[in-house]
Image 1 (tube, rainbow over the protein chains, first blue to last red):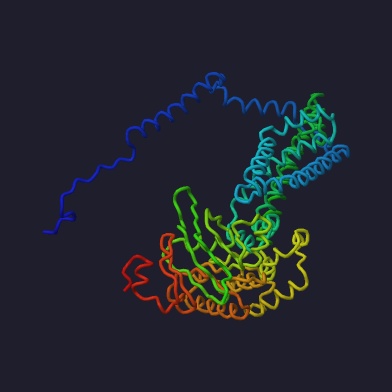
Image 2: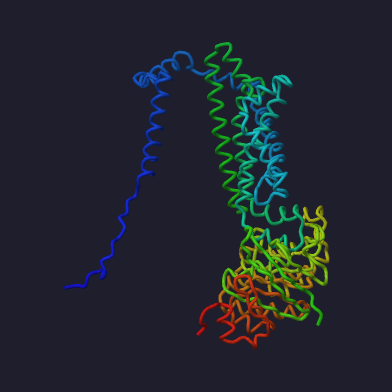
Length: 279
Length: 250
């Protein structure tokens, strides 16, 4: 006969994955989530039975009113000028926004900020303020203050860019290796020198990627800011919508989809080739 | 020989009430190659980082050529750091910069902010960087990116970076623990050679007792933040090691 594995009969604790208080919390959370969903559906009067019919109706409306799109409308030089305007607006806003966001990312990164007591909270506050106000609200505000045109659109996109890129850039700084920072500090370098020599080389690739991605997102937003009076192609969208020129609207929406799609492909391709070249 | 560094009653606590260093006293003379040995967590690395204030001590005095470093303001301390070269365990090179740019970062303390933003180091600095890289045997790798080098080569870049500061003392933090035994001895040999050549004392943190005994002129034994031994390698025997490491050494 084999010897028993446990020679001494010691009482072993019984192990269960969920024990009393934890299991209660778990089920309470699940119940609350589902309960809130049911309540919201009830309040919103979402009639689940009508949902399948929507696709059919959508097709009907599209084919009746929006088809065929007036493609020649988006090929007119006025519209093409507006596309170029939009591109320039997003470009200027991205560059301005990044120039503001880069120092804010330095000040607002917990590990590298020159002053944890003042600059860090100040930079975080500015970035958060830019983020917490939606870009469309910035536009409505700025159009109200400085009137119609490209300027409010560019400014609003700049603020959006600061909020968007400021956070991502700072997160990249917070992920660096500490060793090179220590080495450069040990040589007697000042804080700006430490940032330029120990931090920038480490975040160069990430920051370039973030910059291009930011442009891509800013450009997408810029295609519709004209709807609120801030210049660019969105302005044409608004005019066509107001005149109920549905086939023009269709052409404009299609052109926006296409241009944004191309911009995204372009940005992804540039990001990839850059990270391959300097990664 | 006059002492270049005099550490008195040095105390560090990262969290209030728990001291990592509990009142350390020692001196480094101008011709010393001083090793600090001790078990992991004994405070070796903290001790060495206090000297150039990468770690902020909570009490005591650090007299460097008679000046108390702990009393200096930020910009004066930066100026002092130029006199103290440091070599690191993980080399701490900036991997995406070239070998020569890594060495030139050792001159940042002497270079104005505007010039350094454009990496406009002086002609003398550049000549010096090339000369030092030749001295450590890396003259063919000037333009390579630091992350293309092997471990031993990277540590040589680290040594050149410390030397270009024109230091009056070298702090060396576990220079060999990221290297294999053969490369480790080569690096220690190189550090000993340059210490003589450039006439700088070395304060070196090292966990490998055999290397410490072979290369160093004096040894300090640290255990849980207190000094247990201070003397020449010849005085270190089984009992001393047993005391420092609080274990039976076979």
